[in-house]
Image 1 (cartoon, rainbow, N blue to C red):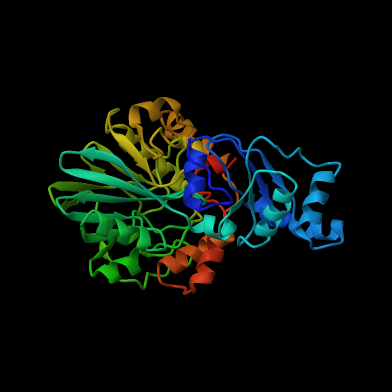
Image 2 (image 1 turned 45 degrees about the vertical axis):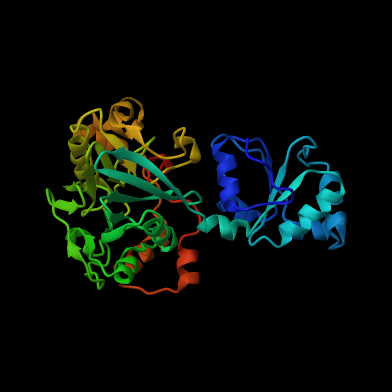
Length: 399
C-alpha cells in the first residue's frame, strides 16, 4: 500500500496507485464531452463519476465550493460518494478540482486533488527496465494516458533510443542517471497517433536519426519527408556497446515498419501488442496492407516461443505485468492474443477478419504523419491538441 498524500496526488502517484490496484473513486468535473472522449482508466474497472463543475455552479446558483459540493451530494441521480475510501477529483488543468476538493472535504469526505489535472496526466510518463541480459538492459518509457510505449536499449555505456515520445525529458534523464551516451535514435515506423520526438532528439544529442525509407513518404500525400534521416534496411545489424541489434522489416501497419531483435527480446513496434495486433489501414490501404501484415506476423511467430515481446502500444493498464511493464513471451501471446490466433489461419481468412473489424481513421492521424515527416509544422500546443485521447493503432479498438 502506498502512503496516501493528505490533499493531492501527482500523476506519478496516481499511476503507482492504479498499478497497485488501490481502491478509490474518480470524480471527473470536466464538461461531459471532454469526459466521454477521454478519461483516466485503471488496471481494473475504476468507479468513476462525471459531474461537470460548471453545471454544479448553475444548479447551486452559487460558485461557493461547499454549495456546489452539497448540490452534488443532494442530486437524486447522484452516484453514492464513499465516506470510507478516497475520492480523486480531476479537471482539465487542476483548478476547478481544487475548489471541488475543498467543498467535499468540508462535508467530511476523504478527497484528493489531481495536481495539474488531465493536462498533466496527458503528459505523464514512466520509465522501467523490462528486459535484462548479460550484455544489455532494455528500458521501457511509456505514456499511460495514450498507451504509447518507447524503448531504450543500454549496453556498455551506449544507448539506442527507439520510438521516442514528443517530450525529450524522460530520455535525457535516463541517459544521465544511467551514465549512457546515445549512439542513435530511431523510429520503427512513421507514427500516426503521436508526434515523434525522434528527429529533434537526435539533433539535440548530435546522433543519427534512423527510419526505413518506405516510411519516409507520406502514404496519402505521396510526398517525401523533409526531415534528415539515415535508412534502415531488413537484416541490418546495428552495433551498440556489447550487443548487436537486428533489424526486421515487417510491413503491414506501415510499409516501412520494422521490429528490432535484441538478444531474446523483440522490440515489436506496431505489430504484436499484448492483447491484439496493429491495424493496417492507417495509411489508407487496409485490405492491401492486411496481406503484408499477415506475412510479417507469420515471420515474427517463427522466431520462437521464448522471445519476449515488447510492444509499441498498450490498450489499457490491465495489460501490464506484475512489475508494471508491458512485456510477454511470444509463446503465451501465440495462444492468447486474438490477432495472432487469426494470423495462424490462412492469409485469406486473416485479411477477411481484419477488413471486417476496421474502424474509421481519425482525421488528425493524417496530419500527425505530416508533422512527423516534416511536411507540416505545429507548435507545442498544436502537437498536444493532435495527440488528445488514447491511440487507436490496435485492432482491439477497431470493432
